[in-house]
Length: 105
Image (cartoon, rainbow, N blue to C red; front, side, top):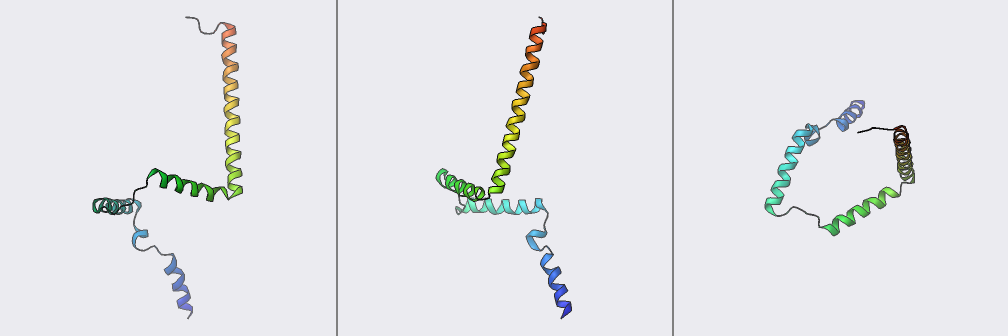
């Protein structure tokens, strides 16, 4: 019975079928499937309202994770702060050049 336990572990982790293929092969097969569905007329196409609802649903799911949302806000604040510093530095260096005579043409 011990041999069955070891076989179960390896069996669950081995990739088989589609998962064992390289990414390029998977994409090629999936592409053919999508093309066939469009030719047959059974492919699903989002209209703008359906796409809006799907995006809203995804946004609601993501925003439930408060830790994730805090990280996003923190990253945005850091980006904004660094952009403001860069703009201030640019303005400072630009005003120094114009007061010293800058680029004369």
